[in-house]
Length: 555
Image (cartoon, rainbow, N blue to C red):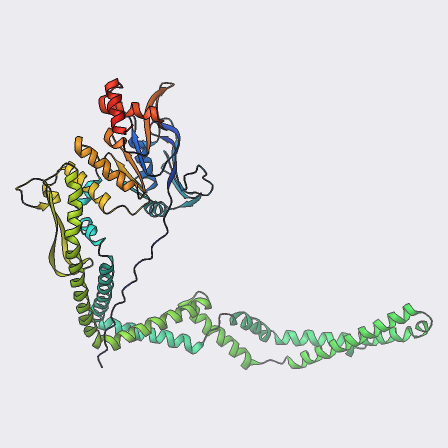
């Protein structure tokens, strides 16, 4: 009878995770030009500025180490043996006792240590933990948009339910296909394996080993092998206690009688006589039991043979499936499970093709639903991205998500997804890798980050504003400020238009101490910030530059 294929179960949508805390404090020791830094970080929009060469990107390098970045030992400050970076995720009230922490230590010896809240962990564990809390958009990370998988991922973030349904259907189909291929590829091998497993399971089950029986059998073997010695010993004891011409019972009886006269007049003697009578009773009982042992310890070849045979059978099982009886029992259980699975495969071979066909139909059905959802979301997402991209200095940009059918279903659907783009009027839409310049890619990436948001409570942008200015710089600042309303945004920038929109403005400075270059980072006070914005605008703090800075700050 043909069995109806089981429809794949769609996994439920993941429950909304509780909001994770932001990065509240960063401590750095001996990284590049930083000797010691303890930096309290505010929420919202945080800008990091400084003159060229001051070391602004050192902050990003430090956070990159917490994300599991490559251990570049050149980052260790010259003359020092190791560097240490520690980040704290908490309320940002200066109290790190209740904050979660992540740290990474690198040394010139090549040894490194990763910790989470003080506990040593693997680098992979550190990376997975930090990636849930921190995202870094590096200066050149926009190239990730060139990957078809990443372009598809932008669209699929909006069709989560349909993607989960398809993934479940595809997984069930591939599992059935793999099973059918395995059955078809090795019928002879499966028959051989069934014979072997059947023999092994039968051999173990017929013996029925009990993991605790060996100790008792060994003791019994020792007893049965030494019955003659046991009988002789017991008989010798009986001779001394009761049967010999001079024996313990006779002497104890004499002692009891000897105390009769004194016991009439002295309580102590009477008590001792009573205790002596008790000893006499005990010796009589012992002598009786020893007589039973002596008489009952005749050789028993049949019992001895049974024990030896049982131990021999158990030993044979241990030599094949051991080394212990526990291992033998466990092996038998595993073999029985595998045998049952192979026998099911044998029975299912005739109906599995029907299952594969039915599950393939489910995949096609779920894939069509997924493609429909992608087509539904492609236009609105492209429009939302274009609205931002055009504000970023590309007023004639065009963009669309195109779907192209695949010959066979893939793990990600029935179609490839390609992001096509054009920055200039009159030009054909083409793949990002073919038509977008580095600056255009950076702005597309910024649009993606602000439209789709980030999946982590803290987001870092490392000079993603490179190559833009004027109205585009103001538009970038607006987008970053909008993103900062929902999460913490840390931006390393050289543009005054962006720094002026920050909630917290940090300056990275470089100075020479004792003949060595040292970088430090500090939060600027309002007057200091005004002068820094003026410097960024004009390279000086003239009255004209300060006036422009005030206008930019809205002061």
